Image (cartoon, rainbow, N blue to C red; front, side, top):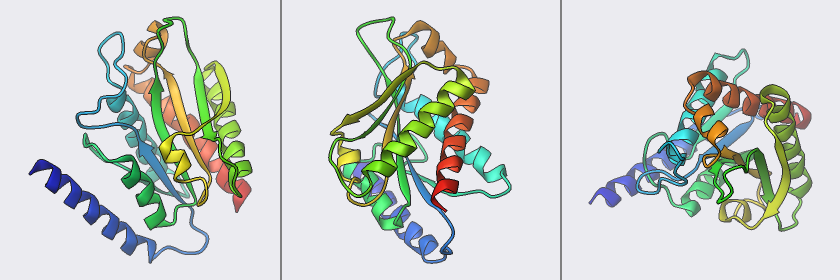
Length: 215
């Protein structure tokens, strides 16, 4: 029964977004931020017990808060607003319903190597008309992570993740691994509200820069 209610809630969200989308102007940019995992899917578990689904949720909510306070806020929507599990297909379906200008999926990394650290930004490994734009967005985000946070860049990479694969023919899309929960320094970094704010700000600056280039 819970699954039925969750699915119904998601359908309601799609309908609500359709109404909002119908009211947007031609100059507004719509961004979907896919908040990874959720519900019974915790994602990676940090060495201190912190869960990936919570870290990326905190970052996404901070992005919304900062964007709302800006002078020229963008239309940013999340794939989930609470601790619920949304299917990968429904995440990209939301972006299609909104006709989003671009799509960003938020995740945290993990490794058997405790010294592994840094940020990775992924682009679909399938070529399309949006491949170059996705790569541009990925490099801009990497640049802001390094400039604003001093995070080590592990480079822009190419992969066949489902959310990227299902977006590649429709819009620029990237997947960010914001850091390693298996790294002692990075996992405790995400426990600090000020650091969560810094990560959110770096992502927003990358988004604003990219949006201005695409106006």
